[in-house]
Image (cartoon, rainbow, N blue to C red; front, side, top):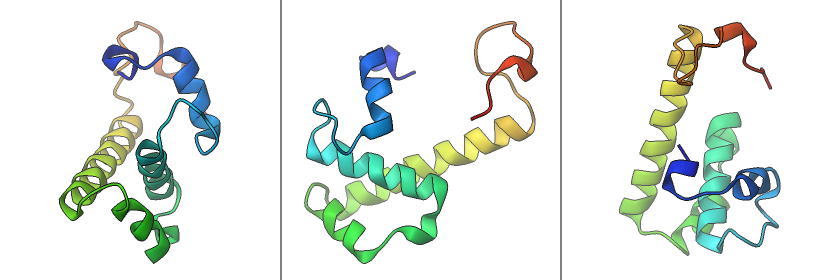
Length: 99
């Protein structure tokens, strides 16, 4: 999906080190940080994280970001648990890497 909206393979690889990646502006970096924390452990999101978000986004935009990230996490967990293949290939579900 990211490639369909203009991100390159280089951009996707840079996500691994997004904090220092030059192709991501500060607003995008803080949004990626929110997504990472929400995905891995939302209890780690601090008041400082919200202060950083507010430097780039309005309260409404923060709610929208949080909603999209949360829904994406939900859909990923839902489809993975039920083994719903959204890859567009005929490859067996078990053939996809688990990281």
